[in-house]
Length: 96
Image 1 (cartoon, rainbow, N blue to C red):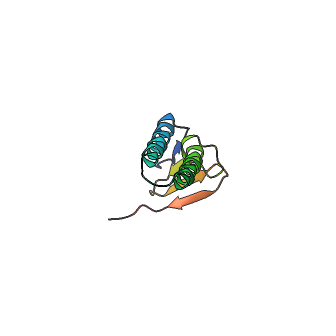
Image 2 (image 1 turned 45 degrees about the vertical axis):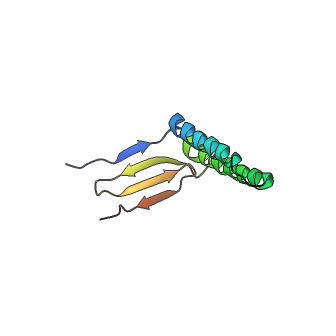
Image 3 (image 1 turned 90 degrees about the horizontal axis):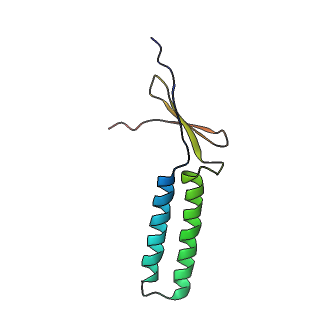
C-alpha cells in the first residue's frame, strides 16, 4: 500500500493577527510607562510597529512573497514547505 502525500494548505489567521497586534500594543503601552526620554520611546515604538506590520503581513495575512502557503509530508517523513513565491524548503525533523 502506497501512502499518498499529505498536504496542508495554510490560510490567513485572525487568531495570529489578534495575538501579534495585542502583543505589539501591550509592548508599546509598557514602553510609554518607562522613565526614558521621549525620543527613544518613539524610535522603539516605530521599530515595534514596523516589525509587527511585517510579521502580520507575512504570517497572519499571508500577503508577502515569503509567506508559507503549503506544507507537504511524504511517506518517509520528509517535510517540504513552499512559500508564496514558489520556493520549496525541505526540513529535517530534529532527533532527540
